[in-house]
Image 1 (cartoon, helix red, strand yellow):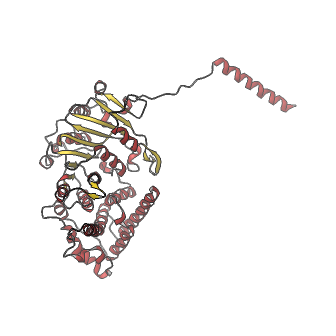
Image 2: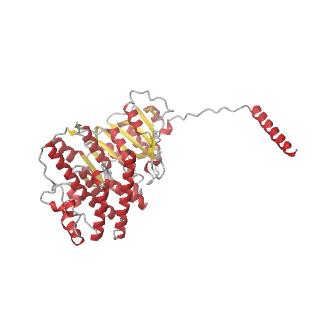
Length: 489
């Protein structure tokens, strides 16, 4: 099964590369614009695929379903994809794209942020080629974050990934974090740096999967509406990412996702992201960035312009009592010596229960970046007594730029050991996982780097006594001398 998935991934890369080449040769050379236009086209295809799927599910269940294309059948992908060149571009630009842009209710965030979106495909021939390639992708058969795949792949091709800390979190790492956090129906979920929406999509799908019986949802219509329209919240400073995450969430079934363009660290976010409001925060915020001091929200108590520290404090403020947070941070957060670094660690340890520190190998984000990162998982409202550490050495892929699948994978063990951490002793610091009491961490300036506490087991090597080694050398020399003498004879 895994080999089949890998083959699909390679096929997808090949098709995206071909689509990119067509866009480039067709005059659409701005990479962000190309990504956006690709996303629009794929979204058009997926709209019909998802609509057809829901219609079939409704027919099976015997319930009424009103197609989103009701009264706009000419906007279905299948109704315009084979149009002749002299008709297709005008049809998509003047009918299909305005229909897509106006999806959602009048006050929906999708409609708000898509109102200025433009369909800028330059020629009919390029549109026809793009449609054919997207058809070949068989997107409706892929249960994957397609926009994110496109964005990630194009960044890797252009070798501009990681700029301003903007690179996509690997899907299997997101799933691990969601498994650690265990989203529940009723949770208010937030990603303050949403990117392509991977955390929000996976949290949403996790909740759906946990509320099924015999593969049928156990959520009532009212509960599903609450989940779709109130539970999933995301913000991103980038306008393109905002549009992409909106389309991504809608393709996964959310009709009215709560996504906004916003700098989550600024004063403008104080009302948009209220304090003590979110039951679960999932994020991989930008690394090593900074913000203009004049723009920083007044809610922050720790004096710094480093975004990785500000995001951590933001998450603490907006989490509800007993709320959970799973976040990726650069490992410098764990041992930095500045007042701000020590203060943020002290805050997390004293005002939250730090449940886990999962140290990840530096190859996780290759080929985009070689930065070493850590997953922190903490719960707000009670002080930490002891911290569970895990030293992840392998994530199931090689840690070089190729990132090919390997048999070594610590993630299943991390999830199992974390679930059983209270039942197991976790006292042997020579193992990958162990507890460290808060007093010891405090005595080390609140240092949370696993290398500070893990014991390295050295294997004792026994050497022979010097006189024995000397004797063996003399014997060897005598043998060599005798052999040379024999050759002379």
